[in-house]
Length: 381
Image 1 (cartoon, rainbow, N blue to C red):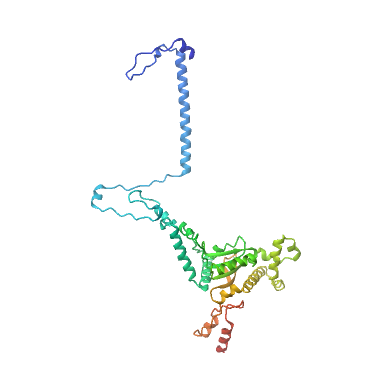
Image 2: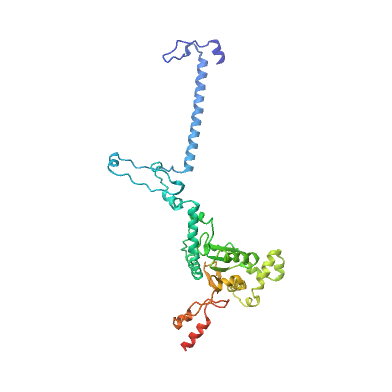
């Protein structure tokens, strides 16, 4: 092409109507024309291929993003607007408030309301919400708190739990303070999620988890903090079915001594309170497992009664201590070995009612008042 063009350069003709000079193709050689046609066809093919690839990528991206969300707005009838008063738009609180008419209708208003966005996000509002929750928790009595836990566990094992995650606004209210009503000394076992078992939410429970739910320096200090500073109304020691720590504590001493020093010390501490001589008389495997765990729970509850500061709260009616056993297979929690203030007998009850009346004890003896039961037996005879 270059050689042909050099031999016979195209002559310029007079400017066309558009004012552009057009080359004279009459004097161009056939070889140059053929080469120009081939190159034009090749260039067109490349451009078509690029357009096809680009369209394919666009379709894939659109499919991965899903259908495009569209917001439809109703048409406005000028004649109706002249006869009707404009509707007042509800004002929105917080940083999302805007001047009227500045924003289009928000199709996600319901979602924002559910998330608590329209409730307010200022720290002052969050602090007020925290104060309200603290006051409500403070007004509950220990028996009411224990009753709430029993009802929550009933909802859990019957499959009717109602615990819901808090909104962003409610979570922000927890920044300023915590006000749990119960402190639980539970096991670290992954199968015992304490808040779920009792159908409780964020900020409702002060949970201390350690293998074998046993007392030590750190766990005792944590419970003392919960009682004296957080003002919890119930302290619970929660054991569970199939506790590996309790099982390992029943191994021979030589096997326990082969464990790492810290683990071996924990198992030996549990072993001391299990009364293996009595447990070895239980032949059924499931009954043996339950009795061993319950024995350990009772031992920890009894250890708490030696804490004078905690027992002073119990004596004044501000605190209740209770043991519990969680059965993994059913989800049911059994409550026992309660320690609470000593109540005066209610003389207005009938003999039968007084016999069945729940009588908390100051020590770790029974949940029923044996003296009232004896008096009822005498009256019945």
